[in-house]
Image (cartoon, rainbow, N blue to C red; front, side):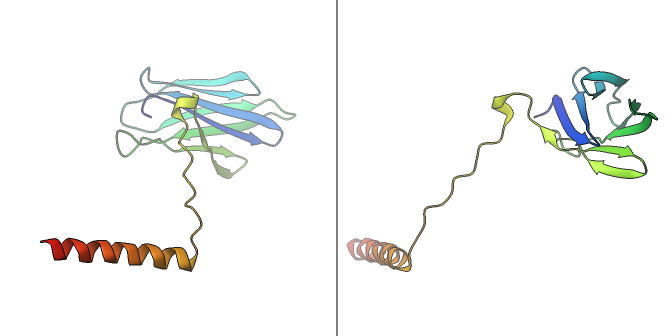
Length: 131
């Protein structure tokens, strides 16, 4: 998932989205669909973007995008507003980037587990006898 990342958080009635494009080395902060901050991203350091939420009175926000530890990792994004820190969740940009849902294992009864164990044991015994 290296390359482009999107983070989104609904905060105090405002939609805050961060777009981080590591390939183009650019980051943007959108509040309610409007760009409020743009900054180039350094290669090996955290990116800091400052902007305002258009409210009465306007509130200052600071977004920090960390540098990932490994090449395939997703960097962490933190929103700071009013002295509070909020971790912004990573949102997939395309359906292909979404993680596949984990399969739920089928329900097993004690009888099924015992029958499976006995079948494996019989199979192992028959393998040893034929050698």
